[in-house]
Image (cartoon, one colour):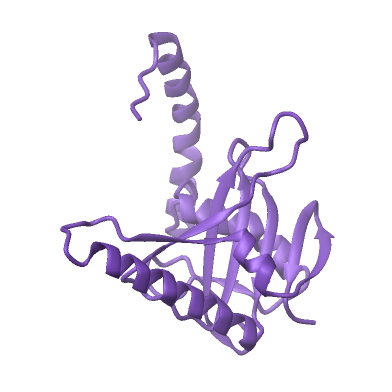
Length: 190
């Protein structure tokens, strides 16, 4: 869907961008990291929350490889989705997370994040480290990948996205729930 803006809106957006560029530049010059890049923003928003219960958790700011690591976990896969709360009740719609059907689907642990689309603030976080839960996630991702392949094997397609849903996760994995810094955190381990 195309979005075209009027001149007043473009001028306002240009002014906002001009204020943002020095901050981005400072981050690049000091640390070599683009803090405006979507994965960086997404991952940084959950860092304090996760470190509050796991001080060993560490983000990978490189573009390739694992997204994070923690004690005993070398390959943490982090997936984020954004949404806005429903107007009437203020709750968030059920989330889903995109994977490449033909990409790497097996990881040592998974973390799924739901952020507010307008503010980027995290609202929900699922921290999945239990081996049984990981197998459940992997089996579902492999099933979705196989289904995608069966549907598309005779077609030329470059769109290989499959989606793991919040509903699937809640229906198949047991979690403890707590609120940390205003974020609803679901963990499948003690």
